[in-house]
Length: 288
Image 1 (cartoon, one colour):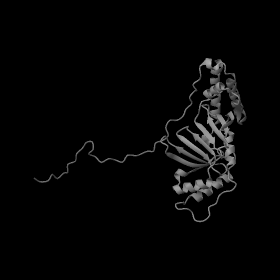
Image 2 (image 1 turned 180 degrees about the vertical axis):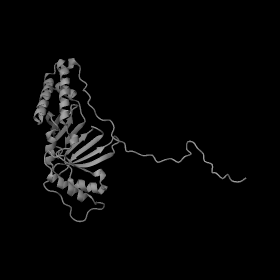
Image 3 (image 1 turned 120 degrees about the horizontal axis):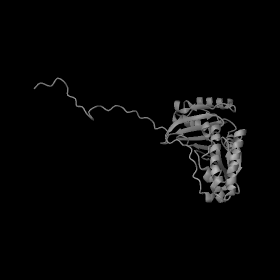
Image 4 (image 1 turned 120 degrees about the vertical axis):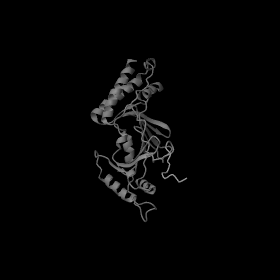
């Protein structure tokens, strides 16, 4: 029998070559949105006079902060455990938290937690594990974070001497660009962002750059959309900002030259919205 002149091909599942499948990086999931706090029962609120007064004062101070553009604060010292619990319940926990580390185990440390009302911050200072102050701060961002970043600035810029380490090629030029930007930066100026993700930077380049920029005591975490980690460097108004997706994979790695990155700030619109929402919650508390 002669060979069949036309090759026989089968059809159906598994008979065709597999095409390459695009493997997209997982993008951030689970955007944070406002959730009203779960309020206590009316009978549990009625006798908490000082807690209710602290919340009323916070609303007044938030209005003052909107009018003046300057931060205001409410001191929570002396509140009873029950009054403090009411404040904690009403404020809740928002998407931004921060800490300023202590230089020693017995030194002063600062913890910051944004409430569910953007621009309403809980600021707690401790020293050697002892509570020093507990306040509600109203404004775009707590002033202590900016102050700590200024205190962390090195008196001089480190300069590398001799041959560069292996695989370090682009970091020195990038450091020169960043230095030029922070030297020329002025208050009110838009942030200058260096996107390291788009640059041919080796692991050694990143390490070399971070070593020369230094790492300060301020750490800010934002969970607005995915996760964002912000740390101050030891150069003036210079921050490292790294974004992660929901799988904790880095999707954006930047250096920002600004007083404080916008992702950590509550915008004026946020403050106005928080003023209205807090007023509504307090109306319920007062009616109790």
